[in-house]
Length: 364
Image 1: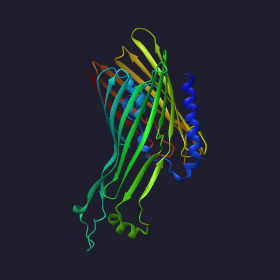
Image 2: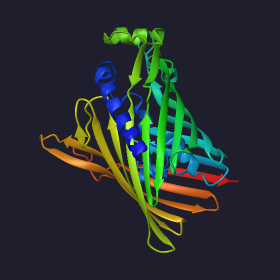
Image 3: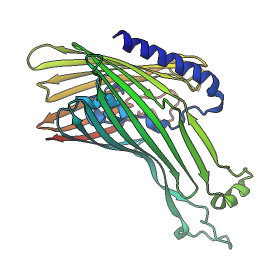
Image 4: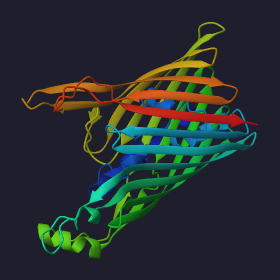
């Protein structure tokens, strides 16, 4: 336990010192699509997973959790629609234990806005509108993660893992980018307690952008803007510390309470604790289970201070809810996120919700 704690503190100090020198040259929220989250179980619990993840989504949340797989073959699929269906977030993963001390997983993520109208050629040289000249394109972000986990033989209950990720981002025919990064994680079990550490982009993730200047030149000249140039961006590390505790009330009813603390080093964010060097965002989740078959979940995350049009400020957290059902290796999960009744600056008084659907199957 002492070694684990010292390693976590050492990594936190290292990341903080690195961000102090690299922060100015790196954009905030770089590759943020990788932080939205995957899986209805996780999103229904407010994205609390670093210490408790135990299925095929572990390659994303914490690769060390791959050692908790109970069967040989494990599949996880997710589909969610954000912003009233404008953006679609999809995830798929396959995971398997290699032996009693190691496991492997491959995961794919896609977040995209599809069918965007390209109206650059809507009006011909004679001034007439030609609707058949409208073309459609997508703005899509992709990531593939290859994850490996191994059990430590030096510290009882300690599991270690890492994920290598390849990133591809595309804006129709106008621009695309490639990136590469590494995540690393650890989990520790002590009785009914579970602890997790997840370090994302520990090497900083490098993403290189290229632009199709010929496709953009005419539009940019008409609007008086400068043509974009090829560029590169760095994604600074993110550190997640988590803990969870399980409760067994009787032979049928149990509960799991967990919390995560997200530390970012790319500048001041709109979170609970923030500074120019590090920002800390807490989130908490709970899962109630009946006979390990039926699950009810809830969570709070995304703490923010919002300012209304009259200048007043309010503090809010995002509530999340979910349910799940598991039988014979087959599990189905449903979650609802962003269920606030109204936003301080919203034009409409009605709130919007995101529905997340997950399907999983494991077999020997």
